[in-house]
Length: 473
Image (tube, rainbow, N blue to C red; front, side):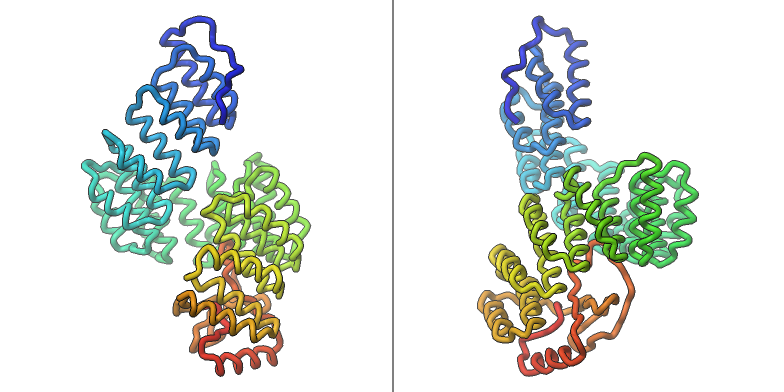
């Protein structure tokens, strides 16, 4: 964002009251997405205080202009703790956790809000060990600090430790209860989630939404809908949870009906809403409705969300629209760097599902160049070649994999066969069959829709080549 040099300064000195009112206006414009107007107002002010600088600094990163915020921060005549906290929050909001840590390390004076911001931010990006280390180093903790760490431990899968910390909290609020209940739900501990939910002093919307998600994951959609219907004032997260629950349980039509109901209330969708709609369209084969959602995502810039991009790629792949996948590559290139690997991985999986060798080769090459030691791209490309009967190319890929030191991780895989997902292990192929639609995990499925003869060919070839597997482990 350039300085608005054409803006004329106000003709007279400003009273403290005028400065105060202008500061409020800058903050309001920034939150409303009107960065140009906020910047023009700031540039016209003949008198600015630290609050003025903090307000415009925050407005820039709130509108995805972190570089503008950093320039303002560097040029501030005087900084206070709020200034430092704002630039840290901006880095975290714009997916720059390492830069946030750098600013945090340079802070001359930290308050509890500074510590809470960095701990919560590290939890958000899955850097749990660093978050826990900083949490333990905090000179003073409050309910926000404890809640962030409870959330982090639960997301890490250490629910027992999260519960122990939750029980030891000096004070709990509604968010603390919701975080613990959500942690139990996300880790499949539904009975414990219900136990906590029954004992929560005040059932807030966050906790109720967590239980909707829990019942849906457990397969009890009727109970989830009953709770949903009982909510008098529903927020967007609540609507999204119920729609995602329907999709997760294979009730795409109900998800789309619920979306129509939400639209009638005037509630505006976010990327999570669109993910549910696109995934429902994918499951039901409603390509035209999916295309309309795609167009809306482009118009509203929601397509920059990696999960939505993955869902669209999967929809087009299931509907056999490779041409749309090629167009999707253009949008992926415009995504933030952190989102690229996941999105390209979804394209590669789609190429496998549609036997598109040429595009698969290009995408796999991009992924391998960015990370030559991760096995996923090699395995998927070898599967693409195997499905096309290009056995020499399969051997070449496996050789390149060994040469670069990439090793497959042992474990289980989801293999899609027709409309089912099969849990596969090396020793026990096709042992478990589940009908499921998972919003963010279709991109990791391996689709084998060949004849039994082809499967036997692959198995025979695999037995003669110990380093080759038809499953994406």
